[in-house]
Image (cartoon, rainbow, N blue to C red; front, side):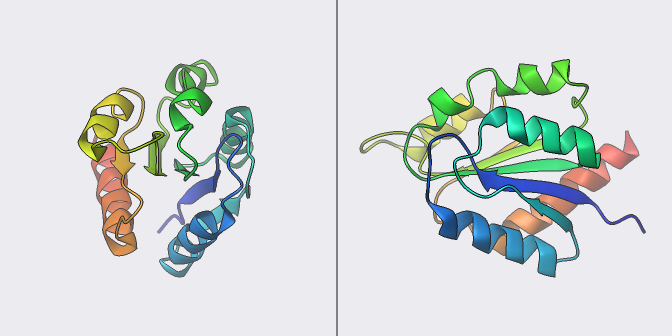
Length: 139
């Protein structure tokens, strides 16, 4: 069975490293090949890493509230790079100030396959990715 490759990192100007470290470890322990980009990662680096490694998914973390600015147009950039088959997940504190996560989810679903709140359950995210990869393989 093919070991799926995922790209992880904290996008944009976000320096919160713990979330992406936990995410990377959980996916690695679940049997995924994890390419960890770390913190303060420009969106273009996620794309470059996905192309270089033939990644199956990009998993972005953002906890400083500026994700909308950081990932604007990201899906189109992925498509232009030939990554339209790559699953795109984002999670964390995606907007500034107090707001309803449901609003963020609606907004980010326009460019991402899955959107998670900061308290997301890692086993659920792993199960979601496995299910999404299996569904993609059936197409």
